[in-house]
Image (cartoon, rainbow, N blue to C red; front, side):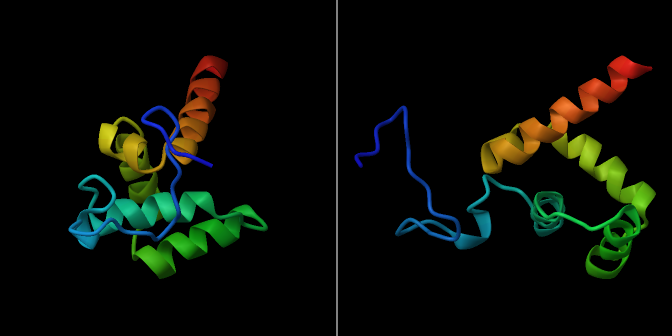
Length: 99
């Protein structure tokens, strides 16, 4: 399959020669990448996710969700992980509409 400017193929974890691996996510910091990675995972129940937030990221869940909300509005996050960011934006907008 040929990649075009419109339809690019990507392989998770792959790097481009000459690209700085620390900046492969369009300038996102390690904490921001970790937050998006955690959001891609599935959890068996609400307590499991909060436990992972505390143990893996060292954050209180309230602070985590504040950072996540800001991250969803960051164009770098959208460029780095459009599927996750767009899914979370839809969830956020649906919850706002319920209020």
